Amino acid sequence: MANQVEYLNPPGACPAQGLYSHVGKVSDGDVLYVAGQLAVAPDGSVAGKGDFEAQVRQVFSNLGDVLKGLGLGFQDVVKFTTFLVHSQDIEIFMRIRAELFPQLFEGGVYPPNTLLVVDRLVKEDFLFELESVVRAPKNA
Image 1: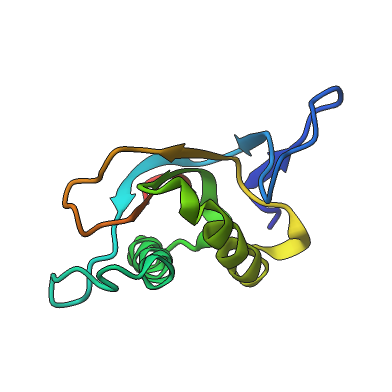
Image 2: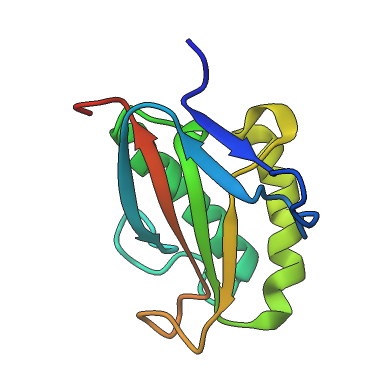
């Protein structure tokens, strides 16, 4: 079965400024909006307090668990919205993403992503949040 999420960079669009595409297209299925995932450990505590890299890895792991619980995977992600508390962490995020994305997505084409630097997240200890839109088979 063909991939039901397609990443597009339309003719005339400027080059993407990182590991993302300009458009995520869902050809079949339902669109689900996944709440922003935070660096929450299995016991409910903040994972990686003060450690941005540890928090990014925990967030991607948590999102993977949500997707798995829905019977989905990262190949079903249509779009990300990324929230960082400190602009100084952008380069660290880009490095980690460059490491993780080839493992999570096939073919070297990645979902659209909007990156925002915000004043803070729901708790001061959280440094990173990742929200996503995903595609699920009908009636998932």
